[in-house]
Picture 1 (cartoon, one colour):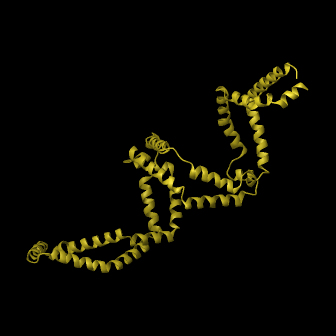
Picture 2 (tube, helix red, strand yellow):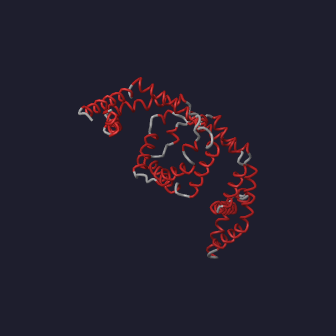
Length: 342
């Protein structure tokens, strides 16, 4: 090896770095990206999804990144702040509900919901069977019956003074027989307890018949018409920043626990399995096309996002440092020195 070999290697190395930096700028960078994009998409027309990554590998990514990756506590704080910014943005006061969802779209959603008759019937039945609803019915019937007996029956409305006399008689009877009110109340409630299943069953039958598709459609759309002109700010009235952030935190905590459930894992596995059943053995380009990702879409994003980012990295000196790390090892290698000697 002659003395000029290291100097020649250094000169070649510097020229190579300069050449690469020049090619990663302006029109040359654009031409390079276009050329590589065409070559990559040509391969995407022949390489299948299963060749690039297996179903097991994709599930591994989901479990590592989505399920098991520890998330910093600052995430819910940032999400809450962003939600508050969105809620308080000027656009909220200038946008109505109808601007976001048209009446025709709302009607379409209603029509689809009306098709879920079985779920609607089950929902009504479960409400009717709920202890809170049964207690509500019992209280309403009890107070209605008591009021009718003492205040609002045909006799007290038709004959002046009878209502007062009945109340007076009630007071006298209570003084003469202490606990008469309690006894009366217990008997009425005992009767209600026996009669409640029948009342609930009849009320359920009534609701199932009364809540027809036409009734529900008219009611929902009437509510929509009353709300579609309201601004989003008006609909959010009363939801302060603090409460909004609390909801965000609750949602975040739910997600942290939900993502680790067997249910989430089963759903993710079902989606990935179907993806590979449908696209695993076909060219990747077919999957991209079905997703609406065309060459023009990719080229536009490369131009609008990737090229400006490369400009920043070059201006900050990162690209040159990367090239020097990447190419320097070769020009210092024994193989390069041997070639320069020959």
